[in-house]
Length: 196
Image 1 (cartoon, rainbow, N blue to C red):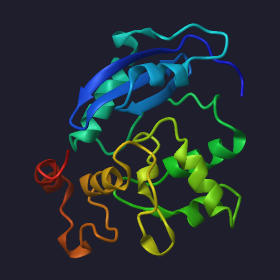
Image 2 (cartoon, one colour; image 1 turned 60 degrees about the vertical axis):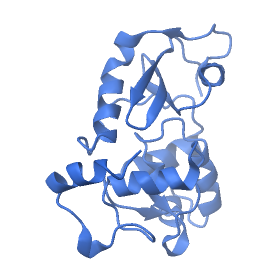
Image 3 (tube, rainbow, N blue to C red; image 1 turned 120 degrees about the horizontal axis):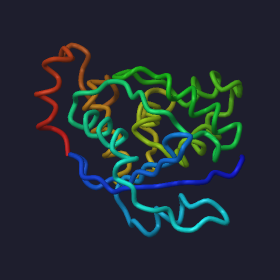
Image 4 (cartoon, rainbow, N blue to C red; image 1 turned 90 degrees about the horizontal axis):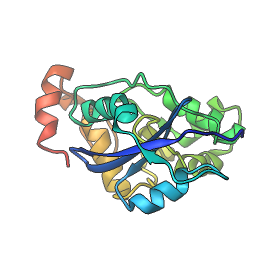
């Protein structure tokens, strides 16, 4: 993992509450789903670098897409991600996860297979537990064996995971039944009332 310089951040308000967003010249570095700004900044600062500086202008395009997604108006992110802080294994796992389409799910085992580590479902879960860019890399779309929700390390835990899957109209245990799936146009309005 090569060092990264020039990390900037901003805190934004969304339907989900306050998010902290850090970016670099390489792209999105981290998204903090609520929590302490000080802790977030400690996590994103590069070794040997000072505290990242606030730069709303640099974060604005990222903030726009995050708000659109959480409002039910965006199905796919087009944001660059700075992969440099991730181990090669985590990078493979999260790249496989990033390819799960909106409203669909995969299991930890399926992601392990796609990351060229069949049988490493637990290690996949650990890599996702440290996903620095939740929502954009949709680890909420990954379920346990047999379709169980598994875990979700973000504040709000499995309840937040369930709400994100419902936002997308995904079919999962305890979620929406496939016969009740709405069309994308209908889903936007109807799901807003269930969210956040």
